[in-house]
Image (tube, rainbow, N blue to C red; front, top):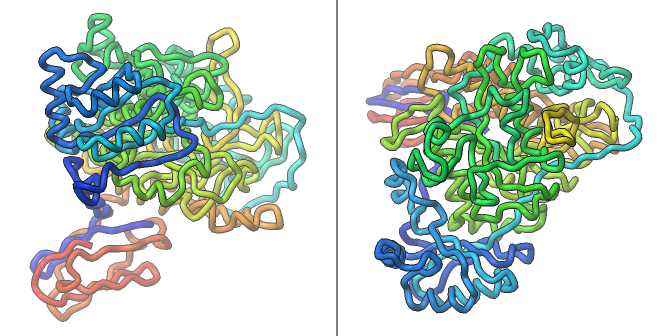
Length: 628
């Protein structure tokens, strides 16, 4: 949905292409339980929870006690609280530490958000999470207990004999693809990356004209900006890949610092290209069987115009001007991801990204559909994972004083919808605070594996190797079998998601520009993204696809339209309206699409508002100010 902000000052109205920020919940210093005697709130209880680890939130006084114990040289595996330590001892606890480590200049805002109260416990893996939660529930110093769920990568790779899909049909005029390819990568690469610019065929396969992310036209406006950082929360990215190395984020303090020392004081040691939250080390891991993160990164920011490999949506023009990839590893070499980082690593990765400059948080992982019910997830107001996502949305791009220093104020968290092929809620993607991405094929129709539902935000090309095992996938960077730089086609909502992340990074680059223009907010970007899509329902026809209609998001990603929309998001000039008078504003003059516009009115007693057919009517009721 699209929201517009309008400020009415003494019967004057100022409209801006932003949106109301969600009211902050309790800042984490209390409120985890309904009463002092009700015991801790249990979050995300599930039979799929990992044994041997759990996350909990201490009450303020208890957290202060732990801090004093650690300052006095107490053991790192205990809290200094008798009741809690008895439980930790019984469970054979080997780690008990702050979930979010002390982080230097960002420690004040970490505490302000109550994140210093969260702790991570690692204990005997033969003890179930439910048994540990039961023991901890008796501790009066704990107010929230959260189960650790395994992250699962949202990709599915299939190699086999191609199956013939429905014949492609030439599409409507808006899908004309007559923009020339602007770089020097090979014709073969251009063809295989049909998901950027689909001309209606891929070698011998007939596809559908315009069933793509419409990237070539967008490259006429922008190609990237190195000040834009995208955090890839995934398997480790091969940072020395021939087609990625120039666009990797580099922590210069750690690169030029002392090995084994936290040179920049951000709480992490030797985090040069990001951090491995699975093994708690600065050394990223990747291999042929762990290429998922590298593939995702290539779609976003493979180096353009370097004569090799593939292109990234925001990979620049070959002049060192691509966006940067920060690798936050939470999945390891298991293709399922189930043996990767538990909840602690997932949460830490998201906050790390915000504190270290990322403004887009790319997530091609999630929990298996059905693992968490909607009822359980709605208790997420108490969840450390929810708090981490809110932290990213709120603080990305801002310094410790709340001043915008990055190319966007606030961050956007983007999740793959999942590959269960089901109309069922899949978390965290179904959380309304994130952008969720379903997958389409080179015919523009829903990919056979994609999840769908009313909770999906939009769709993007994810490939469908059932239509063509050879050409149906998304082509991007990988790790070769010998550990070198490789390229491969994969399919999945994992592949659709980075198209959206890359397009958003390109839109930020376009707005920010060479002059480093400030003022863009994450909410402005979100609204531009969701108001610039093309219809996906037109391809949801026949018995095979009718059930997807209205459930693949607001539409399909259009990168070019997104860039055209983002430059119109600076706002609508202030309007001065006399009491008793009415003003009408044609929103089509300010937005490419008005079909998904909604509004909120901060002072309905001051101004009356009506929205119909893209026309906004504002009536002055009494003196005062309002934000719409």
